[in-house]
Image (tube, one colour):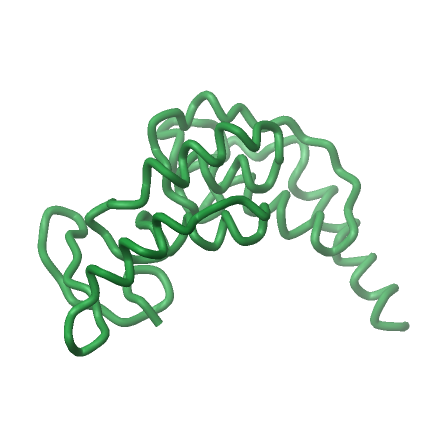
Length: 156
């Protein structure tokens, strides 16, 4: 088996297992089920990156108002590329999110902008200006102030 045929077999197996969606993928709490972090948008993105041509609709309207990359509308629009004008609006709107981290804050929407070839210069300027003297960010997550390092809630 070649690497390519192995990847194709994994993709085919995942497609059979993932669609139609599992009952647990129903949008009880939309941000928990549809985004890149936990939901079908992340699965769809991964499968497409591996060569899948699966065309599964994702109702981005269920995520309206949440601009985050991993659990919000931004990530889903990045995957679906249905509305780059809306994606740019979300990137701009998230420039001063109090969580200066990948999951909710502007670092995540900066990544979205880069992959979609959209403008995030305002976000980058604000992020740079808000850094502390040690190069980290004081941020507000889940109602508390933190200075964190790490892939999701820190700035690594």
